[in-house]
Every structure is written in C-alpha cells, then in structure tokens.
Image (cartoon, rainbow, N blue to C red; front, side, top):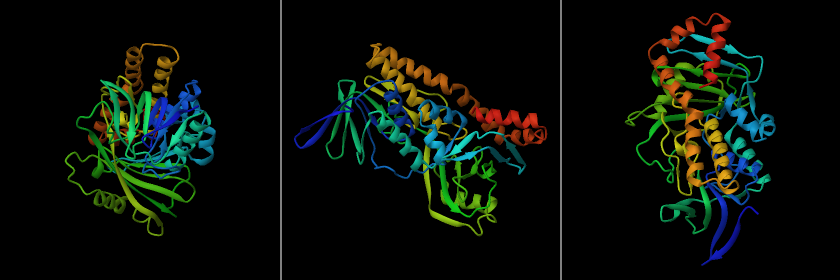
Length: 379
C-alpha cells in the first residue's frame, strides 16, 4: 500500500516510507523511480489538484528526454508534445544563426500535460497522491525530519521526506540569500513561425539571458524573456513589452493572445550546497538545481529526483547507512551538473562580451554550426 491512514483528533495521519512535498517534475520523478526500484509506501502531496497549469517555458532538452525514457514515460509525453528539430538563434548584434537536425532533439510539452503524465506514471507504480495539501511545516524529532503537516492539520509521518517545493522552498536545507532569474511570458495563437523550430533571442536588454519563442503546437506559441534584476528595480511587464515591440511586433499583429502574461522567479546556484539532513533530501529547484545560463530546470529536477530515489532505495532496501547514502547523493548531484553549471559562467561572458557575435560570424560552415549546437545541447 502507498501509505496507511489513521485519524487522530479528527485530523488524518498517513504513515509512509517516503513523503514528497511538491508534484512538479522533480518530486514526481522521485516517486516514479522509487516505484521502479520497488520502494513502496510513497506519498506525494501538492497544493493544487491535477491537471493544473504551471508557468514555464515547457522546453525539454535532449538530456531531459533521456530521463523521460529512463522513467518509461517518454512514449506518453511524445504523443502529447511538440517536437523540435531546429533553432533560430539571434545574437545581441542581430545576427541570425539557423541550426537544424535530421532528428527530433527536443520537445515542448506544456507543464499541465507533462506533470500530469508523470503523476499518472507514479500512481501506476503505487504512489498515493494528495491534492490541495498546503504543507506548513516539517515534523521533527530532534534534528531528524519525520514528516510534515498541512494547513488543515493532516500529517504525513515518514521515514524520509523529499523536499520538491520549488524556487521559494520553505523546507530546503539552504535558506540563505537566493540568486534569481526573473521570467515573464505569454501565449498567442496565429503567430507565423517555422515549424518545429524554437527561437532564442539574445537581446541586449535582457543580457546575459534571452527571450524566446517556443511553439506548443501547430497554432500556439509561448513567448517570454528571462533576465536578471538583483535589486528588483525593473518592471517585468515593461521589459517584456519592450522585447515584444522590438522583436515580434509584426508577427503578433494578427495574432490572438491567450490568457494573461505570467511571471515567476527562477532560483539557481553556480555551486550546489547542502541538499540533505537527517530524514530529508532536497531535489530540483528547491535545491537551486537550475541552469545558471539557460534557466532550464526540468532536466535538472528530474535527474536529481532519480538520484534521490536511488539514495532512498539504498537506505530503505539495501541497508546502506543513511549518512553515507545522503552524502553520495550530494556528490552525485554535484558531479551530474558541475560541468554544465561551470560552463554557464563562460556562456554568460560570451553573450555580454560580443563573443557570441564573433562565433556567429564563423558559423557559415556546417561544422561550426554543429559544434555550437552540441555545446548548447550539453549546457
């Protein structure tokens, strides 16, 4: 059974081996892989019910697709996603670079769909899901986390708690100052675009970050920007409107906007700090595992979830000492993301120093375009 329930003073208490706070890609990848590894009594909670909307560019990189395949959810996602086999990159000085692949290399899958498919996969493996569960605080016995409680008094009492509650996590081990990327986006129908291409525009106004156009189907696109604003001095809507006017005014002239613009912060780290404590393991953006240059978080979230599940399997089934397994999880996460995270600082310098324009000038040769495409795929 996924978890056993008892009632105490009219409040439900659920006992589980693993309780997961947050049903995004990180938390759900943890649940799916725990099921694949034979770990039972897993409970996932989320403040929303499913399917639910989530503000996100929704791009799944080649490395993200590899994780989906390992979780055996790739076929379901592929049926619902929009495939990508090309990139239009615009440098800060306006140079266009077109890169194509004979194969589908990436996906755009709206988070309303992606997260629900991951949830269904987790449930098929025995995970119990509790919706409308707003976790308020952790339950502790000394320095050991033993579960968590909701606003309505429900308790999940666990051997291990997985923290997967995103950028503004209240339950992560590291609670110090955050490094944030600001993002804002909108959706439109009827925008002309090249089929199966994404666009990344490295505009000076948002450097070293970028704006994008990601198609979610044959008719709908999401357009957005991400930028740094450490002192929170810039108005996100004004930044976005200026970017649209500069880069997409003509193409949006006959388009129909769908819904309102939505913004959200993205938390990242160039060096991963503490991700575990007794009874607790942190995954995804709650652990600031988001790419510092591209703001990608779906791959990092799912990958860290897979690694967390393996650590928990070692503790619960293989009788590995918890301190050893949790230290290994932290080392493995750092190793998994270290090269790409270090490369992020080089990429940011390349964008702001004019180096991206210099590189673009050399890309008339197919070999050079292929090299750039490979570098970006590995970021």
